Image (cartoon, rainbow, N blue to C red; front, side, top):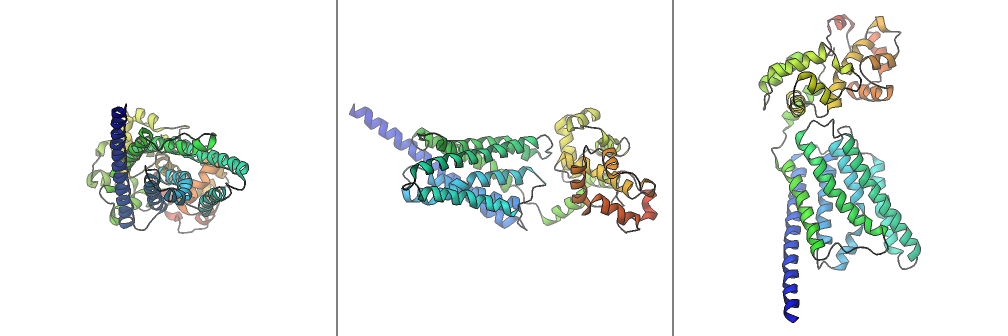
Length: 391
């Protein structure tokens, strides 16, 4: 009996050593991620800041939930652990939604969750019943944030053209969601299940290590230079270069050239046949039209033309057509909604948002300036414009 107990003790010690080793590796890897993000990304954007914050949360989580951690450290880290679902939700939005903008109320939400958790910690001895109810409400809110991040990421998964980011979606969200549900789910039951002891703790450490290994290659890859960023921006938003010329330039000079003939076929399909007008057009439908595998078409649009999102790729052509129509005196009496729907938009709301993001003006303002002879689109050049080319 004593010998069996000794063997069991040795096994537990070995498991604990492996557990601590993986947690140390996670902390070191995520710390390198933070350093590289802060050094290589200039200027810092919301995605970079949230990525660094998420990595910091991962380090604190790995340490706070490790075996034999002093209870004082665990209590001090509770506010950070409680705010992880908010950071995770914001990070997922910034990573997988190219149009996401970090706003002040996002920070207020994080402060509110952390402040409420601190109040629950302080009021536990004086109001146990109220605190228990508050803990369950907080756990529900945290699970809701995790589910919202998952739903939003799945909704935009189909239109994502970046191969690495598409692989990251499922892997990171599933693993992150598991941890958040495990942590916050314990607040929904009366008897919290022990997940930080024995094999449960080792499973958490292995999961953290897997997430860190998934995130690491995306950060440790070749840095994106300012010249490359400027070239990509010009490629996606310049209003002075003919689209056909852009296709040829990218096909011939890009770091990973795409067949020029394939780019020409795509350009003809968009500018001549105007397939972007088709209702419900998806990347799968476009791939069938071009007789290409879907993954290959994603590569063509992303690496050959510089678009990260399929909807942004379609909206480029739709906005160009709408701009030409709004600047046409012969269509002065045509409603903006009619022009938007003729160009392929299904409703006025998405059209207004996409148009203002592309031009800095509402459609009405653009039409007024264009018809008044504003240099936005010179009228003497209007007849020379082609679809896919801005004035």
